[in-house]
Amino acid sequence: MDPRNPHVVRFGVFELDTQSGELHRHGLRIRLPDQSFQILRLLLSRPAEVVTREELRQALWTSETFVDFDVGLNSAIRKLREALDDSPENPRFVETLPRRGYRFIAPVNSPAVDPARESETATETATPSRPGVRPGWIAGGLLLAATIAAFGVVYARGGFVRLRAGTAPAPIRSLVVLPFENLTGDAAQEYFVEAVSDALTTHLAQVEGLDVISRTSARQYKRPNKRLSAIGSELDVDAVLEGAVARSGERVRISAQLIHAATDRHLWAQDYDGELSHILTLQKRIASDVAAAVGHPPASSATSRRGRQTVHPEAYDAYLKGVKTLGSRRYEDFCTAVAYFEEAVARQPDFAEAHAALAQAQVQFLHVGPLSPRQTMPKAEAAARKALELDQTLAIAHRALGMVLTFFYWKWDEGEKEFQLARELSGGSDEASAAANLSLIRNGRFAEALAEAERARERDPRSFGAQVNVGSAYRATGQHDRAIAEFRRALEMNREPSRAHFQLGVTYVAMGHIDDAIRELEAAVGSPGARNSKVEAYLGYGYAVAGRALDARRILNTLESRRRDQYVSSFGIALIHDALGEKERAMAAFERAYEDRAVEFAQMSEYPAFTTIAPEPRFQALMRLVGLPR
Image (cartoon, rainbow, N blue to C red):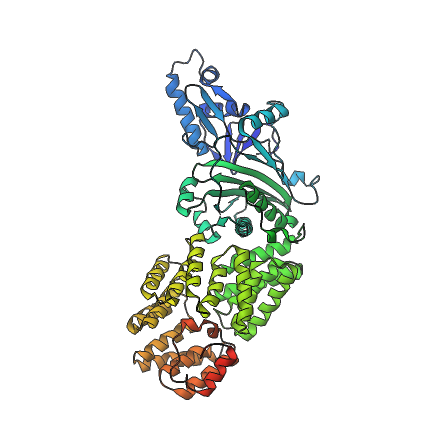
C-alpha cells in the first residue's frame, strides 16, 4: 500500500483505504465487513461530529432493503468495534450517543510520508512528522477548528495531544513500554526494533516522578492477545506506550501512541521520521515528548548532552547485534558481543553507548568463562572511562566502572558512588539496584538494601534478576525462611535454574542445613550448561562440612585439573581446604586468590566464614589489604 495514496486515512495505529475498503493495523490487514467499513468511512469523513442513526440508515439501508435496521446497525457497529479493539463503555474511537448516533473521537491524520521518498527534502536533523488534514474531505482549517472545539487539542513539539474535555484521566505516574511492532518487512531486523522500545524504556526511566516497568517484564507482552487494560492491570501501571518501527534504507519511521490503561483512551500519538544516523536523538526526543504528554518534565540528565547525536549506521548495527547477543549469559556469546562492540567503536570512536556496552560485556566475564579478572577488568575500566568521557549520563557505564572499582580494585567507597549514580540514572533497574545493594549489604545497611530490592521488583515484576535480589536481601537481614520462599519463586520462573538452586544452597548453608544445601547445590551443578567453578567449589565446601571428604576431594581434583588450562578462582579451592582442616593448602590458595583479584572478595557475604585459617596473621594481613572485616 502506497502511504501517499490520497485515499488512505490514519488514526491511532490504524490505516483505512477508503477506496479499496482495506483496514490495516500496524501494516497487518484486518477483516472488516462491508457495512462496518461504510460506517467507519462515514465517521472518518466527519471526525468529532455526530453522525445520526438516520444518516446511517439513509447511507447504508435503502428503502428497498427489508431488514431490522436496529439489529443490522448494532451488528455492524459491534463488528467495527471488534476490528478496532474498541469498547462501547470506554471508547477510544467510536463513541455512542444513545438514541442519537455515533461520533469518531480519535485524532484523524493524513497519509504518512514514505521515508524513502521523503529523503530528498528531509531536514538535516530528525524531526517529528506533523499530522496534516486529509485533502478532499473538508477544509483543513474547519477540521482543525472542529477538532479543537470538540476535544481540546494541544499542539506540543510537533505532536497533537487529545485531552477530551471533562474526561481527562488521573495523572500518569507509571507506564510500560510494550515491545514495538516490526514493520521493516524483515524478521532479521527484530533486534533493531527491540532496541527502539528498550531505548525508550531507558530514557523514560530517568524521568523524575515516573515509574517505568523494566524491559524484562515488558517483553513478556510481545504480540499480546489481551487488551491493553488487562496488561495495565497486571503490571499495575497507569499508561501503556506502544508503537511500530519501519525502516527504508537509511531512513527510519517510528510511530508511538500512549494509552490510558484503565480506560483504553488515547492520550497522545505521534509519528517520527529521521535519518538512521540520528536514531539516538530521535529516541530521546520521543521519550521527551511522552514525558511532556503525561505532565513530567524530562530528566535534566536527558537534556545535558549535545543537541544532536549522530551515529554511523554500520557502527549502530554492530552495537545492536552485540546488545542482542549479550542476553544469553553464555561465555561464547559474551565473546561474540565483545567483538561486535569493538567493531562499533572502531567504526565510530566517539560512540559512547558502544564503549559502555563493551565495558559491561567485559565485566560479565567475571561470572562466566575461563578468563581471569586481570585479563578482563583493565579493558572494562578503559571502556567505561571512555564512555563517561563522552557522556556522563550513561548508567551502564557508571555501573561497569563501579564493578571494576569494587570487584577488582576493592575501592569500596568509590565503587559505591558509581553504583548510586547508575541507580539514579537508570531509574532503578534491577542490575543497577543489585550493584547498589552489594554496597549496602557490605556496610550492614540491610533494611535499605531490602527496600531497594523490593522497589526494583515492583518496577520489574517479571524479572528473574530482581526476584533473586529480593531473596538475597532477605538472606542478608537474617530472614532465611522468607529468603527461601523468594528463591523458590525465582526457580518457578524457569529462567536460570542453576542460579536459583545455587542461591537456595547458599541460604541453607547460612541456616546450617547442610544436607538441604548439598541437594540444592547438586541441582545447580547438574543444570544444563551450568558448569561453573564457583558453584562447584561451594558444593565441595558443603561436602567437606558434611564429612564427605572423598566427594570434597573429587571436586578439588576437578578444579585443580581445570586450573591448569584456564582460570579457576582459588578462593573456592581455599574454602574447601579450610573446611577440611588443611591450613597450609587453604592459606596458599587464599593468597593465590588475592593475587588474582578474585571476584569472591567482593561477595564475601554470600560465603561462609573461614575457620581454619582465620586466626593466621597472613590471612588477617590480606583482609586488611582488601579492606574487609577480618
